[in-house]
Length: 326
Image (cartoon, rainbow, N blue to C red; front, side, top):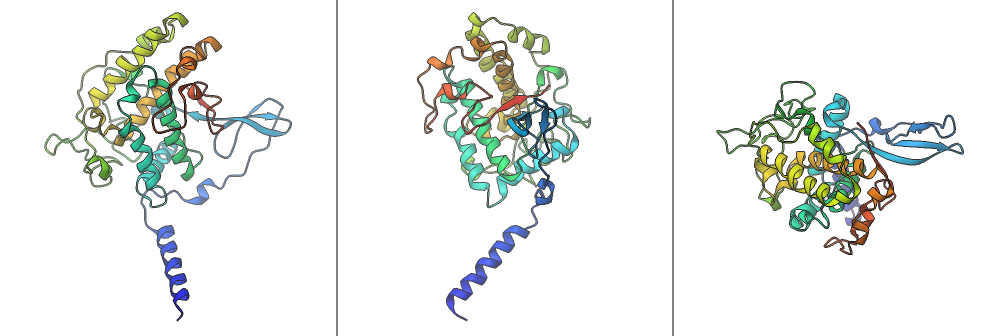
């Protein structure tokens, strides 16, 4: 057999191994084989094959927005799809480098990401980068948000089907074990099913729930959203200092360690909620949308983007459009 024939066969075998490997969270291609819907009435809204919300115009789908939903209100199927896609991105050879690179954005920029000048737009960029990675696997996936304000007295509950911390394959698993360094021992991210990146030291995902009521309930959130334009600094500081810090602290473990918290799957859901609150405040008018950040000349460290490019969720870089659903 000639040498090039040999290497050709080796390449074919390797390709087959990757495509047929028994990844437990693998998403089958036929799940994504959905025909593009036809437009109905002019200006009506249609959901396309990637489950984006689009507008019908001149017989074509246009102005398509990714729809981010509250995790505990999603169907079991959609929750599983998100979790499976997240895990697949973190382990599959075709996506793992992208996953490591995206997580590293947060690992390397934790100090900058907490500055008031960039906190909101920086995390909007980070969420979109992570979402772009997941949508390479399944274009129907968007990052959910966790509205902890509606469940402040038993936010740690995992016994009900809809609970965030449900231990089945549609939840994130529960608290860590007090007998084993707070390693998570149930759910899709348990120590026997998933681990942190090597660059973060590897090992298990940890949680150390502080089982007490959260300070900020829906009433507090609504008061924050009602702040007038001239109190933007108060609005931003409330999100960055109060709403941001407490869930990190009460979940504990990996989530509460700024050096490695980007490994924690709940981090994305928490920051998506903060982004949703900014998004809601911005919908009060163009002056609310464009306050403060257009005058910030800072570029995100290690990237080509400026703060002002991540202000309008309906006009983000890469032609990305995002809407949040209640």
